[in-house]
Image 1 (cartoon, rainbow, N blue to C red):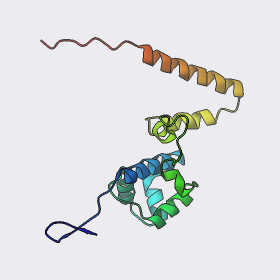
Image 2: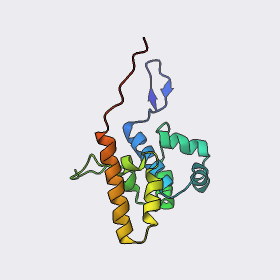
Image 3: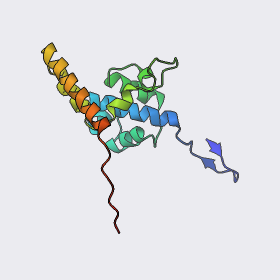
Image 4: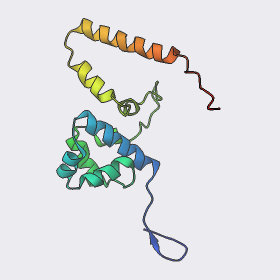
Amino acid sequence: MEKDTSGQTMPKQTTDVDRLVGIRITALRKARGMSQTALGNAVGVTFQQVQKYEKGQNRVGAGRLREIARLLEVPVSAFFEESEPRENAQEDVFGFLSAHGAIELLRAYAQIEDEQMRRDVLALVRSAARLAQNRAPAPTTDPA
C-alpha cells in the first residue's frame, strides 16, 4: 500500500480500468440472466460486494476475475478494452448492452426463429430510431 505524507498507509484507489471491468461484469451478468446474488454466491462474496465491483468502487482480484469469467463463459480479456483499434470503436457492445431494455430486446429478438419476421422487427426498430432522432424537441414553457 502507498503511504501519505504523514506515513499512514492509504488504500489504493480504483481506476478507470476498474470501472470498465465493472461495467462489463454487469453487462455480461445481465446477458446471462444472472442476479448479483447468484454471481456472488458462485464466487464466494456477497451481492453487495458484486455491486461494488460493478460500480468500480472495489477492485476485482485476478483470481476472482478469472472465476467470474469462467462463470459468465467468456475469456478474461472480455473485461478489458481491445488493444487494437476497431473500425467502429465508438460502437462498443458493452455500451449498447447497458442501455435500459437492451438485453430484454436482444433476448426477445433471439427467440424469433422466422428470418423474415426478424428482418421485419429490425426494420421496425430502425424506423422507430429514425423517428426518435427526427422528432423536434418539445417547446419549453416559460414558468413566468
